[in-house]
Length: 41
Image (tube, rainbow, N blue to C red; front, side):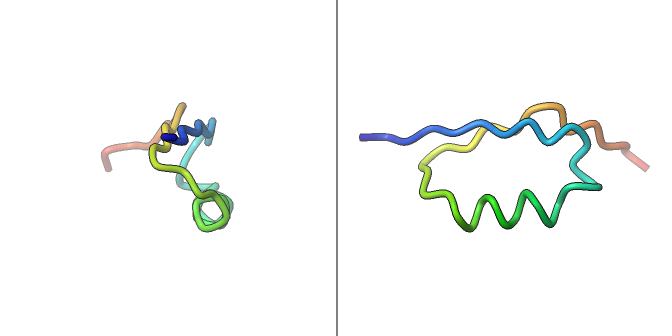
């Protein structure tokens, strides 16, 4: 069975440590990230 997860990061730059921890603990095949809100600078 394929496992799909979603994570609303609400600004990826400030939440990278949380995101990386979650990705390490999650055994999913597909991860969808929402509300990245990052700048192109």
